[in-house]
Image (cartoon, rainbow over all chains, first blue to last red; front, side, top):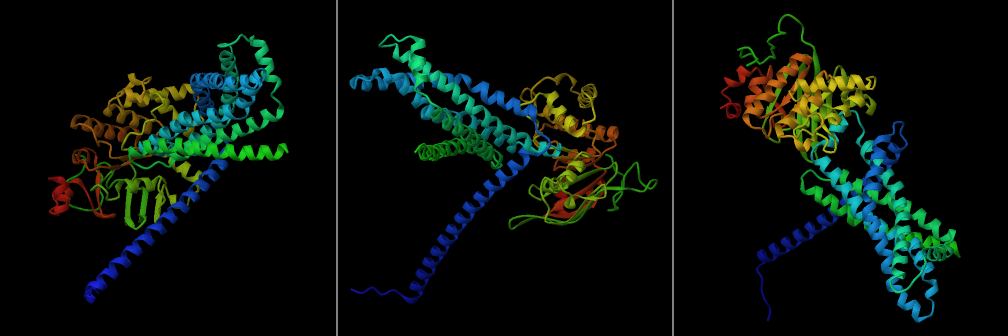
Length: 280
Length: 263
């Protein structure tokens, strides 16, 4: 059976359909434009940051203050997580190694795992949660309460005072925190090994360090600097470009953690590939 | 009330009229500013004369705050000119704007005190950057003086979070005047304050004008503040100057829009 639709109604349906299509096209165009604008914003932000980093006047006092906040204030958290990291890794690995009669390589295996991968990545993810979100929230609230503008009218470059100092402090302090976490991880591993055994502290550490070579340490340290830079950069970018309302402070902090964690994992994946290629 | 009883829409100051030629410290001509498709300022022109308090009235969203942010270069203007001490802000590079900003104090609507710093550090911050020639002893002296001028010398070591709204506004004013600005821009100085504190802030604005011989633009929709501080008023409507004149001419106006403000 054929359904007859009046011409006027058919035209109206066609018009509405076309309207929906055009709305959808406009929305897609808008989304593309927004994405491109975001990319351009990031490039401009990084360009501005690099320019200000090498400017004549460096805010040394603020840089040292940020080093203290990022480094010293994060120590308790990193101490606990670093120790737990090594402890848990030992407890989980030990039964498997015992099954294969390879219990003696436990200190070396844990040390290599911690230094090459677990230490840098887990510490960086924890720092993304604490440092990047802190920066996002702090700069976001400064933006909302006009503190950044107040700085600008005081002839102070907010980018130099707030962003450069934080990014550099994160780039410097996060690798140190990672090395510290690695050390405590090995200590945690020794504690874990002593739950079901009796290994002397010196023997455990000498065994652990005998398995670590320059090729383990160098890539880990290099990528730690990138992790630090990413965490500082993302935290500051999200905070500095927060919207106007108080809601945007929460959004800035939240998106700083998510984006920083994601980029840390991507950087890690790239670093592993590069290390693997260089090792061949 | 600071103004003479006159219907003349030409700007007239009580103290300086007729005797000395008035020198504009800020001269804005044909200023345009838009955000996307929204035109906020349209062909706006005004002058701020030396030593006067110019009150800018207008409804929310009429472009008052945008105007003063354009003056200090916090927002870039689309076209027109903003002459501050005979220098066009729109033609200046970053260092040029920084030099102009050293002569301009800006009191933000929210106070904008740095949360992570004490009151002393808040006042030290602009001083160390704008008056680099000062030693620590001079800096301390200026901080104490500024705090005494706003009546709060005892809160020097407190954090902004420990202060009330009115106190924060006063400290913010102290931070503005500590660098001896020649021009002060007030962005809604009495917003969010009770009537008593609002009056105190308005009186402080007058005291600062007398003591520092500063010229001021006061953005407000608080008529009591306007009554207490204005030498001259301008009303902005839809991004343009709607009316300019003395307080008296505004109060006697039969224009419904102005009457709505002064009822």
